[in-house]
Image (cartoon, rainbow, N blue to C red; front, side, top):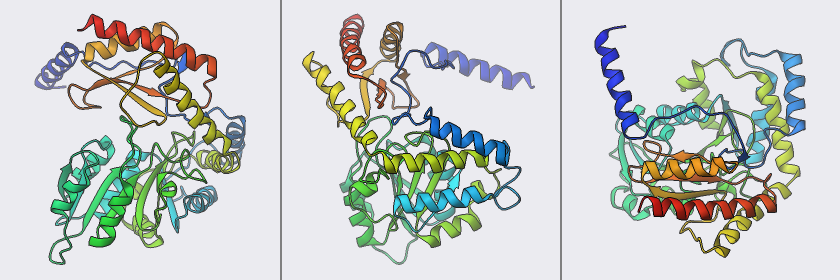
Length: 382
């Protein structure tokens, strides 16, 4: 490897360490307050059994892309079931949410189009917008008026897209989807919604915020990650049939990727069955969220954020966030510090992730620990 590249990389790594931004691979340990396994389905015996049986039946690999020999009946089955679950005409399964986002924006947005992207969108959406070759307009977080200024019906220019998460992964707040849908209806723009942290959690069926807010799932394109509340892996793009067919024909991340193992799709079929038949899981998650916020408020700690299963605790300084995470981990709680570039400069934070497996005693104990650590860290770095 050339010495010049080695030197450049070493210098960059040194700057990362100096800024206290170095990442460390750390396995799970302690009470889960950092994963996205909101419904605790990743360890559900029914999903494990479904996957194990599918491995014995279909093997451990798909052997090729979906358009070659990698397509299996299980994929078609889970796509039909997810489309019905979402209320969409069709769905297409990808091996990751990152690939699904890349597929949607690089396939539909072309040169001459305009993509309006929320400034707090996930990196996969940001990268997808960049790779689309469309003009990019990054607007302030959840600022509908900022879109109004630029987005006008005009047949002489290319197509416009509004791209947003429904529940933001690092802030836990909800996008104004109804207002975006109204703008798209009036101007002819297309709404692209990443439901990664909402699918499985919101709505009467549990299909996400598009359902809960009463929006037409066929009037937009949604990306629905299957590795979070659904407990398995991959992601579904859902929407009108013509859009899904176009992805099959033109989406490079779909065409040129080896298909996921069919056993993963089998586990997802069971996951959808559980979510549909056990709405009490979603009710319990909402109860767990309320329990933690109430416990914190009883100790005088109130955070100015929407109540969701994602609780961001902004500490600003990287050292402060790391110290708080380390202190909570020492008390047996798996909480991680989130620092730039995952979040904007100066907004390092703890990202508390709430799941249905937390009992009252654990939540109350965590609230006490969090209040103590929060106060100590603030005083130490005042």
